Image: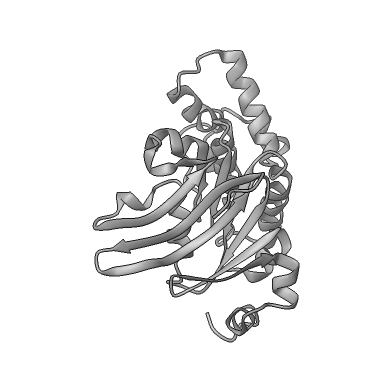
Length: 253
């Protein structure tokens, strides 16, 4: 597969097993820089395994095995130090997991772990990250209060801000709005659309309407196979594969 200009990830013949179970089968695709790629598919389709492979979280599971190659900016991710990779490819999980610390300390935790101690710079990072996550105006006057005082939607945006604080290049979203109300979901989606100006975003979602709203392109997985990958507006109006059409229409899933 030829690597084109602006390609962030180049994935070639990727196969993943957990013991005898093959979770991904011969996946080949490219992910462009500064795009939102929506990843859809029913349960056990391989979409979360795919997402977790992009920063090597799968290898934390027992009996994990991989064939094929994933390149990030032309470098084999299996040859990149895992900690370095996960700093550059951050993850926002389905359930917000704030630390039992203040809002301020949640944002600065990862930055401090990487050695930053300058108080003025830390404060700048907190403000920048919270603004990027569309949370600054709601919390700027209570940065020293516990993160647990925030609503669920605010906690999720706090986790986005915490990820942004260490300045990754890629953000992986694993069903980030699954437990949120429509207003909170809209704020997270607004943040994603704005963030793609500076970051590459891969969004796993069970909400096909969300995939249609925010994705520049969408990929459909089924039984560990990549069924279809196309521009989102085309896939949702004229999918090339009947299985894609059936899934989008809610005939299975």
